[in-house]
Amino acid sequence: MSKLFPAYRILALIVGVLLAFCALVITPARYLAPDGSGLQHFGETWSILWAVHGWVFIVYVAVSFLLWRQTRWTAPFALLVLVAGLIPLVIFWVERAVTRRIRAEHPELASAG
Amino acid sequence: MPPDAPALPATRALAPRYWIIHLLLLGAVAACVLLGRWQLGVWSDHRSADAEQVTRQQPVALDDVLGPDAAFPAAGLGRPVVVAGRWDPAHTVFVSDRERDGRTGVWVVTPVVTSSGSAIPVVRGWVPSPGEAPAPPRGAADLVGLLQPAEGNDTADSDPHDDVIPELSTVDLLPRAPYDLYGGYALATDRAVPGASGQPRAGTAGLETVGPQHLPGADATSGLRNLFYAFQWWIFGAFAVFMWWRWLEEDVLGRRASPRPR
Figure 1 (cartoon, each protein chain N blue to C red):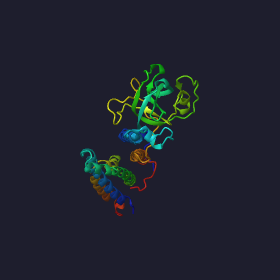
Figure 2 (figure 1 turned 90 degrees about the horizontal axis):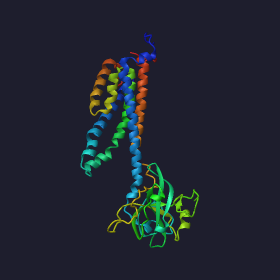
Figure 3 (figure 1 turned 60 degrees about the vertical axis):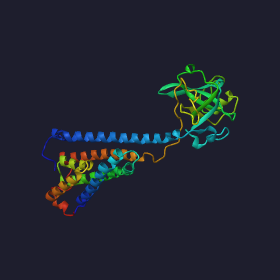
Figure 4 (figure 1 turned 60 degrees about the horizontal axis):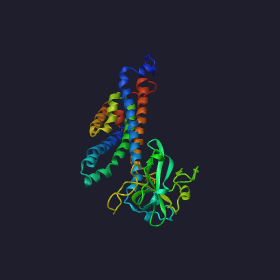
């Protein structure tokens, strides 16, 4: 019925991959690789993905917020879902927890997904 | 629909168990505002660094950029040029009302007569008052200066016979100079003159250096990414406030119906 839950899952995946790539590959390459090396140049060039992550994260936060309003999760769990988009790799685990909770507590939201 | 609690909305919203949420909101908003301001600062640093790039170019001979009879070229703005010739200490002038680090003082300007026979005013530096200026240099001049266009003529010289002028303009200088003038002036630096051995003869001793007054504008795109980051942070902050407000209204105050009641 609602497209929110599938939208949430797709956004969580994109945010998770972008964040892991930016935080674990691009930024270390930019600051840890020797000056002037190809690896450092690669880090410089692709650090624009941080901006992409930022904008996708805004959409992720908006969708998560709407989902929260429908599920009436407690504030701590909702905050965990929102903040997960800022800590590398955590979002993959959070997305599974959200999926489990939605399927168990709000099957009407999960039916479309 | 509203819960049976008779307490005032404000009392309910400020219940101790919600304090941590309110504090988190304040922290998040403060962090977003500061991070946005930081990125805005990075953006403006990028732009000034971009504008100052021209002053770090390799110096070229003055006449290659600005000939004695030529109009001031756009490419000459802030360009380092080699000024070589003879100091004309007798025509040293002071430009009044010049600020430096919040203090008002004067620029000390001595013309250099080049091999073309024309003279270019060289700003040797800044002093709090004309009386504190060291004796002007004599003899050969050889220095790297940053080229600047002559200033406008908006201020009338109150006394055309003294050695204090209101602006470094050709009109103010000409009555005092027995030669033709270039259409710009140079800000003396202590940089080494390319191809010359020994110290530059820049006449800057005892004076504080004057930085470039006019530089070409920065590229519109320089540091643009940081400007976007700044906006991103502020949008985050605004959205955090929005989420907090909706949560407060629906979950704490029970003012609105849930869109999908359990």
